Image: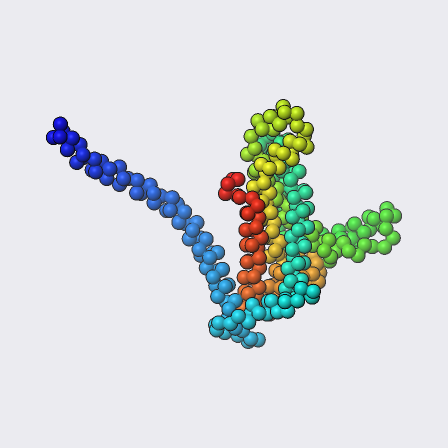
Length: 312
């Protein structure tokens, strides 16, 4: 019996090697598939960010950039920010930008959620859904600047809105705050970025099992109860992703603030753009690093509330 068992034990390692050898290429396959995207990520994101971080520590003057280490650029960003009673320029600028973020998030969610709900639960045909999505993306076929400039004839002092209200007798004098104000900037943001809220919410709604909706109605829930207790909790990943999209876009936007604010409203992106126009690249890089850190902290706080990896 021992003579029969020994060959079997001797053959076992050889079989193991035969089975493990083909498994090694299969383990490498995911890394090979991810390599092109990882290369694009490194070349077009990681390296530019590292270069921006490096330049933010360089010195500069009116004529040149000096590759010498200094913290003065960051001191300039936070200069005078120790007094909470009198906020510094950086704090006031961030508060102004966060105000636009909050308003844009609120209005894009108010518009985007009902639109996504309508597309997901009331439009049964995939063809009609795609046609409506195409309708939402048509404005993106033109430049953002062109779309913003189109608001000026509508909201100006002698624009269509003021002329219509005066002809109807609603107002006697033109409303000054329609253009080059916080209202016009927020309106442009909502116009530009609502689709970034619609798409992820619709994607979450499309994945909801319709039997859950039927079970809620069978249990006696009303439409609002079903919406609040079933649909909204299952849409949290989509709402979070849409929030991240809108938040990152608004925080760094300077074109919209400049055009619709009449170059009179401050934002973080506008400060960076002005510094770059004056060739103050180290100062602009320092502001960009601070902005990136602020956005990442907000996204981290959002992911603490909603675990996207678990929900998706």
